Length: 553
Image 1 (spheres, one colour):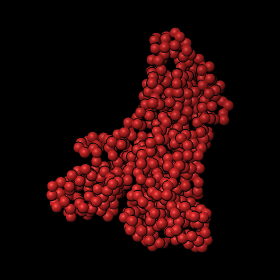
Image 2 (image 1 turned 90 degrees about the vertical axis):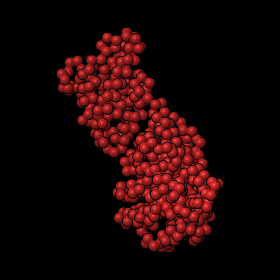
Image 3 (image 1 turned 90 degrees about the horizontal axis):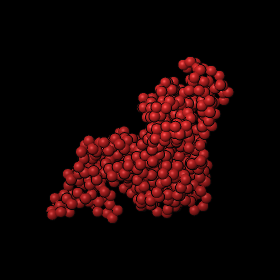
Image 4 (image 1 turned 180 degrees about the vertical axis):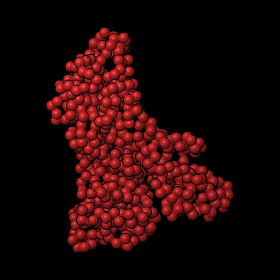
């Protein structure tokens, strides 16, 4: 069998879709004959899987030519190997001048051959060594949800087979949204892999996924890629979740906190020098920060070398500005403002829950990213009501369906709106739509789980919890609406969707259409309600009904 050390590697970058920069690269083994899977299968049959798997990782470290964070692939079975087998990898990293925190071990399928508790134990041991961990191949392999819940990972990689259906396949969209919800709640990061088309890239951006990888962005190359900007401009997409600090993460250049001025100067004087250096302790916690320009001015000025060369760099350093990766981008900007930082061009150190350095962010990039997010959000708002379009309700409906949550979807519109315009004029019609939009906005502000979309014209969509719909209906139907003194009525069609009773947002839309028609046939401001699969339509409000009494449709 070919020795792992004789295998060549290609390196594929991972891009931040916020900054356009390369945040890491993944080492991909390229055997001269056959595939990596075949190589590992043969090693498993010979009882040498962990040895060959770790040998490939060591060979990748040797062939890597950059200082970017490095992603190394490991089979889940290798998690069961004795920890001593990782000693050679640790030694190779030391020889290469790399710290374990600069390495992400991507744990891939199959997971089932190894008991979950043993896999967790192995992952925790690797995390204790300082490695960052990722779960790879989500959607392609046999990753148990229990492991996803308990594993101490920093990243989750959504497999290309799941994303292949974007942007048109509702199931692909639903899975991506569910995983984005999971990673947002747990403080981990989601990586979209295998992007091949512009449509996939636009869909990934629109969903709010912040890190991506694929041949569309950059194919694997024989040598590690130098940091470069991703210049492909995104199409205008539906705004995703608000960005967080971790979305703008760049690799940090670190040295031990005991480093001398000469050691820092050597790093900063290189051709591809970073903007600064972070001094870290033995647990990778930031202790000081050096800005490239200020430091070089100090050590290259008159007597600078004589005064500082062999002395600790900490004497010319500043206390590091730190923020947690899960903090919101707006929270970050508020912190900068509140702290009255005079050096907003400096690197800000991003840390995990234990205060360990994950990387750095630049204030200017966060400002630009927040501005772009706001522009995208504004572009999706209706100019009359400043409410978002149908994508907002569509995403929330898809999320609720994915997690099996009961909800109510509602369609609201103004009765005989053309007559309103023809009688009271377009300006009065616009004022009425604004008034309805303001009422819905106020309701959404008081009902935590309610989402509202302005579809266009006089049509509005609402999704809310089952116990919220009575409040929504009462606020809308108990109010006397008018356009320039002309009395106006509204119709509310509602669909109560129990857990598992509906398959997609498209099905919700299809079932609401006849309910809206039924509501508009009821005199006065009306409210009708039904459920998926039910033939009965209840008329809960309208002339001829009393309060909230029901009547057959």
